[in-house]
Length: 218
Image 1 (cartoon, one colour):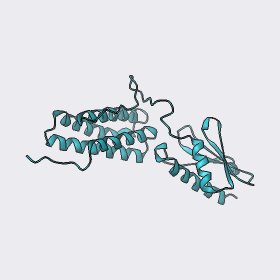
Image 2 (image 1 turned 180 degrees about the vertical axis):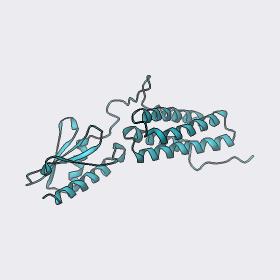
Image 3 (image 1 turned 60 degrees about the vertical axis):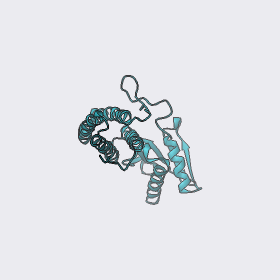
Image 4 (image 1 turned 90 degrees about the vertical axis):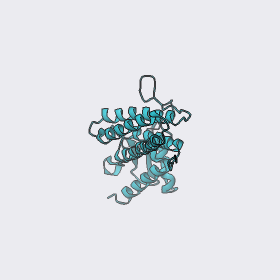
C-alpha cells in the first residue's frame, strides 16, 4: 500500500502550535484566534493522514478531539475569561498528545500541576513596555528621549524642547496605549497588539502613533 505524505513534519506543526498558543494566551484577540485555529487544523490534517496510513489508533481519537477543540475555539470569544481559558487548557493537552503520538521528544508547556498557566519567572514576556518606548525613540530620531517608568511597566516619551510628552503604558484591560499630555492625558489605544508581535513591530507602531499625535497637536 502506498503511504500518504503530509507537507509538514510533526515537529514543525507542534512548534508552530506552541507559538500560536502562546500568542493566544497573551491576548486572545481575533488574529491570535485565527492563528491558533490554523494550527489546530494543521494538527487535525496530520492526524487524518496518520489515520489513513494506519499509524496507530491514537491518531483517530486525537483527530476527533482536535475537531471538538476547533469548534470550542470559535465560540470562546462569547464567554470572556472562561471560554479562552478552557481552550488554552484543551489545546495544551492536545499539543502534548500530538507530540506523544508522533513520538516526538515532549516539550512540556508551562502549566503547573494544578493546570494553571505558569511559565518560569522572567520567561513569559521577553521585553518590558519600557523597552518598546526606548525602541520607538530609536526610530523617531536623536531628538526623542524615553524614560522608563518604575519596574518597566511603561515609558515617558518626549521630544527635545517640547513642553508636553507622552506616556506609553498598559490599561486595566491589558491594552497598550499612549497618553498625550498636550490633550489632557487623552488615551489612544494600540489595538490588537501583544508581545508575540515582537519588539521591532510594536516599536514601529508606537513610533508611528507618536509621530501622528505630535504633528497634529493644536
